[in-house]
Length: 195
Image (cartoon, rainbow, N blue to C red; front, side, top):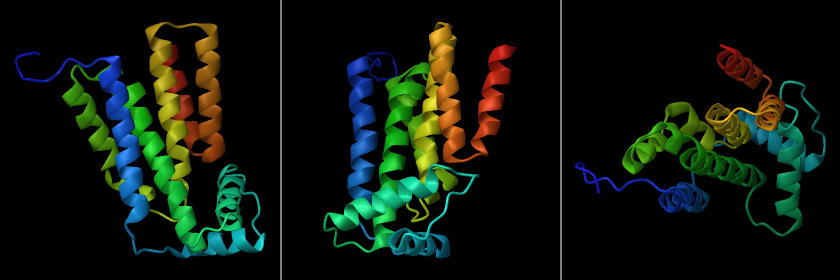
């Protein structure tokens, strides 16, 4: 232990913390009623249920993934309302993003386990992240891809290679397919790496 009492972070501690950042919020947010239904979320759930949704070029993963998710759970006997089924997708996506951030990003930037968890808390409890996390609009599906892009950028910086650059490019592409505006993040990462 160091002077501050923090445990030195290690791969086992990082895995445990990441698992907790995934499991605990997913369990809490999927069991507690949130009580808010947005107009967009309600409209999407109706369109998904009726099969009348269309691809939107601004977010190509959004509609197909949302429709598949809602239909999968409905066909398999979920008693939840369709809009609540969409909230579960947001909850799972947020958990994946928080857990992935804690495991892959925070340890590379923080010096202690406490600092890595503190950084993850800042991500998870930031206003926009938290609102997306409990949303029935499922915009949260972009966050695991964005975290993956940042994670792969940090891995690339540790030891640049062509294969790592390809993985980084793929993650930037997946982020852009989730939401086209994430292409700006991919371009910013590329520009930063080029300097």
